[in-house]
Length: 105
Ligand SMILES: [Zn+2]
Ligand SMILES: [Zn+2]
Image (cartoon, rainbow, N blue to C red):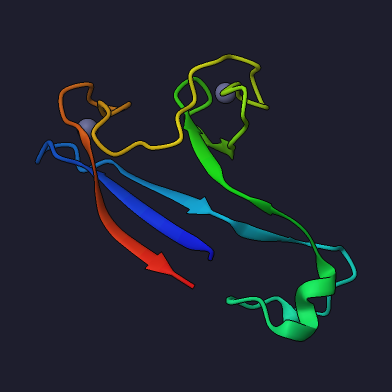
C-alpha cells in the first residue's frame, strides 16, 4: 500500500517538515490520467512499471529513491536511511524528526 509520511522536527523554533513516500506506483508514460489514482484501480495495474519509496539525502537535502545499497542516486554518497523517525534534524541539528502523520492509500 502506498503511504505518505510526514516527519516534523521536535525543536519548537525549527519545525522542519519532511514528506516521504512509500510504495508509490511509477506510472508508464502512456497511462491515462484518470487511472493515475491511489489506491491503484484494477484496470490500471498494467500501467504500473514499479513502485518507488523515498529516503532523505542529507547532502542533497531532498527526497531521493530508496536503494538497497543506501546510496543516494543524485550525489552517490551513502547514508540514506529507510526510516527518518528519531534521527537528528538536518536543519537545526538540535531537534529530532518525529513521525507526525501517515496517510495510507
Ligand atoms: Zn544526495
Ligand atoms: Zn530542526
